[in-house]
Image (cartoon, rainbow, N blue to C red; front, side):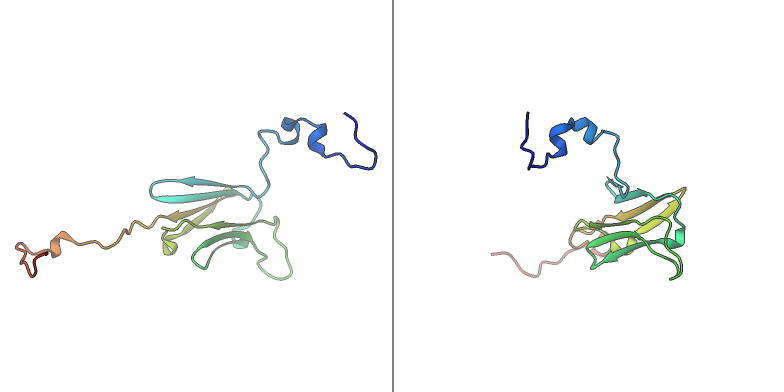
Length: 135
């Protein structure tokens, strides 16, 4: 296959797909997401970063932001990292927790189990009175 000299040749024509994108290639800012019945778990490998440089924030109750930030103005973080995720509809924003151990940041976003209203059986009297009949 010959290409005109004036045209540039895209790499994907010259190299096979498995050499361009090997199966074990993991991007530098990769975050693993796991879904469980109770929560969503985000885990990121961020070795060499101090705990004080990590920021986990929620923006507008819709977005989870994980990033590194300098502790003071004179220093830079060892590694630059920033990812933003859209949170699912039914999550408990106030219950979000994060932990950083052995270079792995784990953020747990619990699901909101509220589905409408809940009537406690203890609040229901033993005998119900009929106030109105349906037509």
